[in-house]
Length: 125
Image 1 (spheres, rainbow, N blue to C red):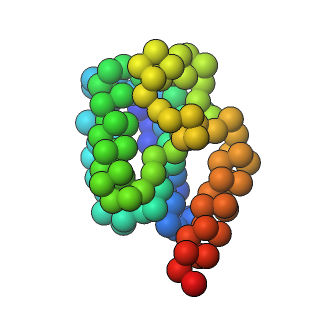
Image 2: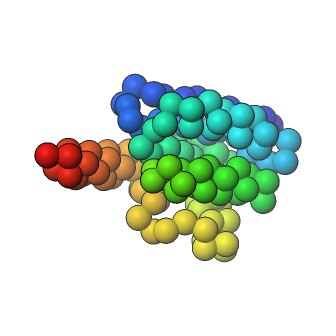
């Protein structure tokens, strides 16, 4: 099975990448290429929607860690939403993500993003 990557840039300054299928050695380069395109827009946050992601390998983890590193350097965030149990288990094993970066639903993520935007507006006053 291959990897599908759908980019939703309808809520700037956030970019949502919905992943489906398998994120492995064969498909990770496609994600890295797409992430490079997304990062060129200088988003405040990159959101990975993993509702349809069935499998992730170490190469897939590296692609996500690479995104985290780039966003950290740019003072941005990488957020995860709708992580499937099998994929969540991989992240749990490597203890890769801070707890605040993983959300149970789009609604929970949207609440967080709303608060993040309010905070940014208040800081710029």
